[in-house]
Length: 114
Image (cartoon, rainbow, N blue to C red; front, side, top):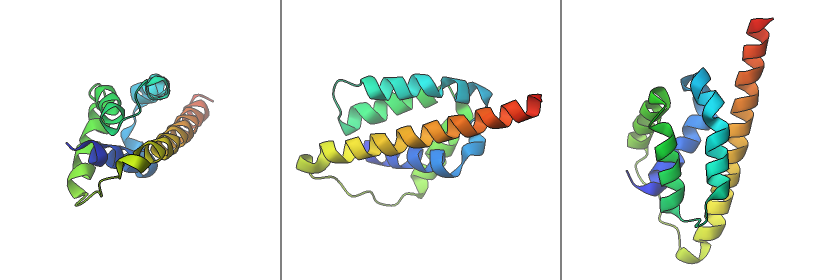
């Protein structure tokens, strides 16, 4: 899978398919957020690899990302000069999306236990 497509597909899954994130995936979101924040080299490849290594352990998320990736026909290559800015923006979008997803799912779990 191309790194740009993986990142775009994962972002779409986080924003549009929160139902694929089970309890274990929600608990593990904080580790993904930390991994992405701690990346020494902000390259598309390292960013995508961190996401891939995380979703390998979460089958429903992985399947949703792979299906979404197949539906993405073309992702424009970023200009190397703007790539760092683009990655910073992508990181921010994914991090905010993961935080919202984590908060929402934990809120739903809290309501179920009451």
